[in-house]
Structures are given as structure tokens and as C-alpha cells.
Length: 434
Image: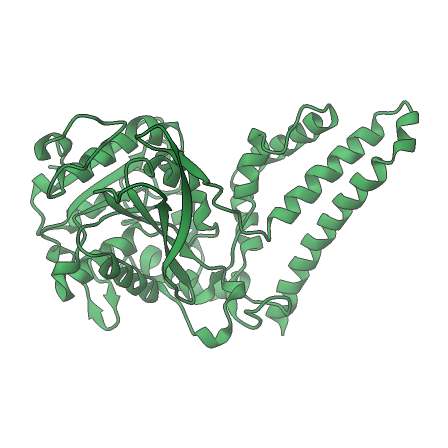
């Protein structure tokens, strides 16, 4: 009951702050106060508006918000999100572009289960849709999953990826962003041994901790500083009575958000103070840059406790993937079994979460893969977010990834709006790792 009480206490504090913000905004917005020549009421209403929105977003799953794209024919094509596979802990979804023939490039975008929803990759999906058939792993909030659904750890996550890849077939290109990079590599190796015909054609790993010790960061050092007992005691709670997953052990989203915010506390505090000022002066809007960023950033989800703890214990502390000792469902996978899947790594020079060196370690693990099928790219000025969703992704990384996909397909894709040239295999792999 102690863990459940703590969970409900956090939700109570969040709910109270949301209520205080709404109350302050409503009270200070009464027309009668406009007769009083005091800016205090404007600032009070602004504080209330920003506070209510901030705490309300913490328990909302954002929409994808991708309604249409402009096709090659110059017309707008509506986007329909379809569920291909439905599972208790996550679905495989497809962004169907109505009125368009299926694209040759079929991409599975593996979203992280690290505190945010898959919608964090919204801009990544939007940028790929004009040129690819896009599938995404849409992980569920653990607080909404009944205890009867059972456990979900790193092995279950890997097997989910295996099933998704087998469902989509071998004519597939996989892009894993951040946290799932080592597990996606493991899923590919698992298929290489168990079902070689279901392997994807290419695998692109973006900013993931394949070898956390290659270049330690504050995130990886944290896993070293604390024991598993300390983590379980301080980070794990039981879902409270408000949600369907009541009683499930989780790493709460609100606790994760506190960790996220503390990493750049001064910058976040300044951003909120500045936003209150803009609201008070009538310069803010519903979808201004602040709201656009924080509506997504503040929307956090609970992780299954066993997934969080096994990630820390096996990926960060035990280095099972980095040392080629990872076991899935009783079978020790061998990354050397990957012989046909082209592998590319992407890293950001200013990434303070998965620093350069952590992801490229995947190429050394693939001992059975020829150098012609290995490639790596370092974006010098990009941080963690920028390598998959920012300007660096749009202008530099995305064209290289599409070229890599084309170079490792049976035939060139039907079209490539940003990269009209038809890349040859050697050209796309010109940055192959030695």
C-alpha cells in the first residue's frame, strides 16, 4: 500500500496544481478587475493559464496531428492511422496515405519506451511520409494496462519487435530511435538465427546506448552510482486506484518528468517565466513554439517496472548487448549472425544522453557483416533531439538515411522528393565504418 499511496499522492499534487491554475485564471479574468489599473490581475491570469496547461498535459496522450500530406500529384492526401497488430503493451500502427499507391520504401520506425509517447516522433513520421510507407511501434501507458496482462521486460520488448518485423516481411527497413537501438539490434540478430527470411533489408540506429560505457554520460553514470535495490525502493510505485492498471508496478511518468526537468532546470524555469510574460502581454498563442514543445515534452507515460529495471540492470549495468551476451527467451543471441542486413548508425556530436561512441559500437558487434554493409554518420552540431526530429534530421540526416535505404533495396524506390538521384550501393555506404 505504501507504493500505491505514493503514486496517488503524486497524482493528487498534479491535480491540485492544475486546479489552482484554472482557479487563478478564472478569478483574475473577471471583467470587473479590468477596471482596476493594476497589472497584477493580468499576471495572475497568465500564471494560471500556463500552470493549468502545464499540469493538465502531464496525463494526456498527444494526438499524432498528421492530417494530410501533399502528394506528387499536387493534391492533399488524407492520413489514416491504422492498427496492424494490437497487443497489451503496444501496437504496430500504419500511416495510410489515402489515394496513393503503396510506396516501395517500407519503414518500421521503432519508438522508444523511455517516458514519452511514440508521438514524440511526430515530426520524424511527417518527414518520412512523402517518400515511405511508415509503420510505428505505439507503446501503451503502463498505468492503463491491467495486471492480468502480465509482465513486460526487455526480452518481451525484443520479442514484440521480432513479431512486428515478421508480420511486415523482409522487404522492410527499420529505423530505431534512442533507447530501442540495442534491443532492435538484438531482435534482428534473433531473426538472423531463428527466421533469416524475415530479416529486414536495412537497420538504422539513431543515438542509442548500444555500449553505454563507450562514452559515459550523466544518464549512464546514474546507472552505475545506484544499486538495483535503491532503484526499486526509490523509483518503483504501484498504480493508484484511478487507472485500469491499479496495482501494477511501474516507473511513474511524473517521476520520470522530474528527472527530465532537473537535467536542464534553469532553462526550463526561464522558459516558463518567459511564457507567463508573453501570455500576460497578449503575445502568446495556442500553438506557439513554447506550447508546441512542452505539450509533447510534458506528456509522459508510466513504464512497466520490470522493463525499467531490466533495462538498467542488463543494458546499462550488465552490458549484455555491448558484450554480446544478451539472452532472449532462453536463447543467447549472436550479433555475428547478422550477415545480410545493412546497418547504419547515426550520432549527434552534442548528444548528452547517448554520446558519440555509444551507438557506433553496434558495427563492431556485427562481426559477420561485411564493411560494405556498414555505415556511420556523425552530425557535429546536433543534440539528442536534433538527430531525429530537428533541423539536422531534416536537412542532413534524413536524405542520408533514404539513400542508405535505397542502396540496400532490391530496386530503387519509385520516387524520392528530397534525394532525386538514384544512389548506388557504394555511394550510399561511402561512409562505411572501417
